[in-house]
Image 1 (cartoon, helix red, strand yellow):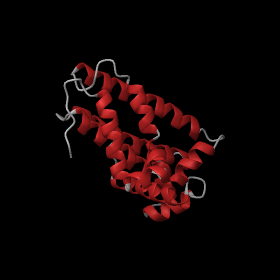
Image 2 (spheres, rainbow, N blue to C red):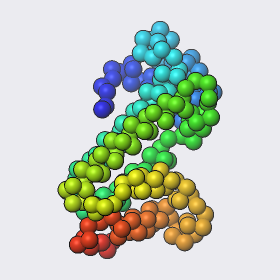
Image 3 (cartoon, one colour):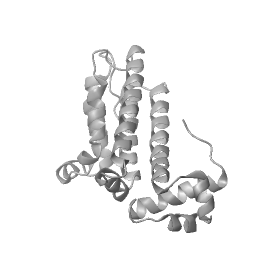
Amino acid sequence: MVTILNKKQSAILSSGRELFWKYGFRKVSVDEICNAAGCSKMTFYRYYTDKLSLAKAVYDEEVDQAIQKFRDIMQAETPADEKLQAMLSLKSDSVNNISPEFLKDFYSDNDSGLKEFIAEKTTKVWSEIISDFKEAQQRGVFRQDFKPELLLYVSQNISTLINDPYLLQLYGTPQELIMEITRFFTYGIAPNNSKMSSK
C-alpha cells in the first residue's frame, strides 16, 4: 500500500534515499539529510523518530512500489512468457535500483535491528507473491503443479546470474540473458497448450 506523503516528508524521504544510496546507511547523518531536504531537525523528527526509522521507510517504499508493479504484471491479460519476462526484468531493475552500500549496511548491522526488519519484510512479501502466483495458477496462467517458490528462488538470485562474466560472454547483454532465462522457464511453467512466441 502506497502512503501519501506531504511535501516536507516526501523531501526528507527522497533526500534520505539519495544519500543512503550514495553512501550507505551508517555514513549518513540526520544533519546531512536535513540539509539535503531543506528542512530543520525539528521537522525531521516530526515524521521520523531517528535515522533508522527513515531507512526503514525508504526500504518499505522501494519494496511496496515493486510489489505493486508485480501485481500489475500478474493481473494483466498477457501470456505466461510475457509475464515471466516482465517479472525477471522487474527483479533485475529492483536489484540495480537499491544501492549495494545501503543493502550492505542493512545486512551487516547486527545491532540496530535492520537485518531482522528486512527478514520480516521479505517473509511477508514472499507470502503475498506466492498467493498471487497461486491465484494465477487457478486462472490457468501457469501450470497447476508448478511450485512458485522455485521461480521466486531464481528471481532472488537473478543479480548473480546477470552479473556472471561467463553468462554475459555467452549472451552479450543482461537483457538477452534475462530473455533466455525467460524462455527457459516459460517452457516449464506455461500451460501445456501454450506456445512461446518468437521475439
